[in-house]
Amino acid sequence: MKSKQLLLIAVLIVVLAIAWMAVLGAASDKEIIETQNALCASGDAFAEKDLYIRAIPKYEEALTYETDNNRAIEEKLLAVYYEYGDMDSYLELSQSRMDAGYAPESEYVTMAEIYFARGDVEAGAAAAKRGIALFDSEACRQLYESNRYAYEIRFTGFDTVLATSSGGNMPAKDADGWTVISAKGKSLFGTSRFDYVSRFNSSGYAVVNDGEGYYVITTSGDKFSIDETGLSSVLGITSSRIIGEGEEDGAWGIYNADFVLKSNTYEELTLSNKGILLAKTGGKWGVIDEGGTAYGAAQFDSVEVNSLGEAFSGGLAAVQYGDKWYYINTSGGNAVPGSFAGARAPEDSSGYLAVANDDGKWGFIDRAGNLVIDYQYDDAKSFSENLAAVKVGDEWCYISAAGEVVISSVFYDAGAFHGGVAVADTPNGAAIIKLEYPGI
Image (cartoon, rainbow, N blue to C red; front, side, top):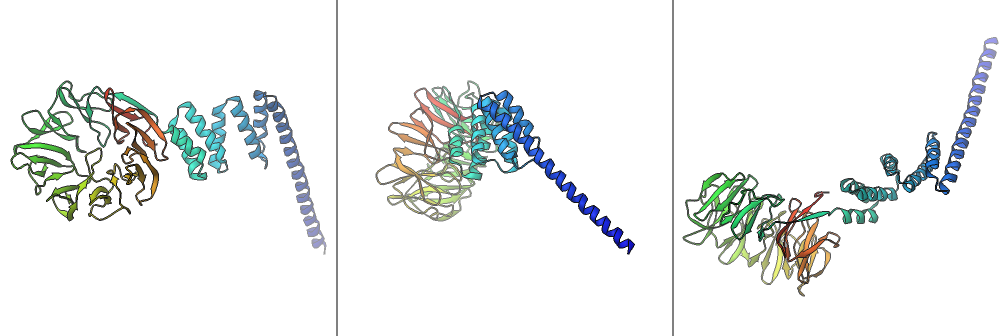
């Protein structure tokens, strides 16, 4: 009996202790909230008078306490940081809120604005893209599109420059002949000139003609092989194959890097993309590979090539059949719904495609055949690297995928972007347009 009484007393003591601790805890929480509220009230009073250097420490001290009010206090502190111009502190606090997953859309917009204003385009683009992904934010999208296309125009001093897939080592021609220049406009071969220079292939080989015949060179200018078959013309070299025209019969064929014929001969050829090209035989074009294997019948009346001289890109090519243009796949089958009065060759694997309507106006479709930018231009070229060259009146400019003009100057012609570089024809000759931040 006595032991039961002792046990009951012990239980009562524990219950009373817990209750007392709860009372103390409640009192402590109340005191914390009261202290935090007092600090915020003081901060509010200073902020209303624009006394930011006195408001900031009050809010920061208030945040040393953990209550349900912290997020609201953080918002006050962000506003004061911004008004005071302490953007580093704003970015640090805003980033922590983003990492915790409760920052609103407006903070992504403001963060992007701050970074773009500082010239940190990569960080601004990253913040804007997060805002787009999380909130489908139109404000972030507009910031992203209006800042991502910073560019520089370099006048080369050459009459003609050919674009390359890498954006470097570009064939260039002046009054003295052909050479190869870097994206900065510097000649790889000094003052030496050739009668012809092709683009370098991905292995670093190009075909040149010095007036006595064709041969293959490396990027350092060393000879790799010499043409002993007597080609009269060369279209270019892709992968390990040379597209050349025989001197005796005027027929085009596919040659290896030692100028040995590796295919049938044709009336015309395009350059290949990933080993696939278009060949003309019997007055019609068809799909072949670099070994000359045909994929379907030669049945197309005409073809388009892109700024690299290729018909195919991303597995698509623009071909004419009768009085209409279509997009075909590497098997020769129709790949994009619809037919068009005109169509430009694809420039990359995913960009919008330039097509014309019966009124002669150009617009853009996606690869499902949907019209995404209305027919409104006098000419156009397909998108690459999220940009497309369009002609309005007598001059060209570049638009974004949103249809907004983002690069403009006096361009008589404008090519597609590859490797962050495009070539345009200007009153001062060929110019190189270089994106400052390609790929963002």
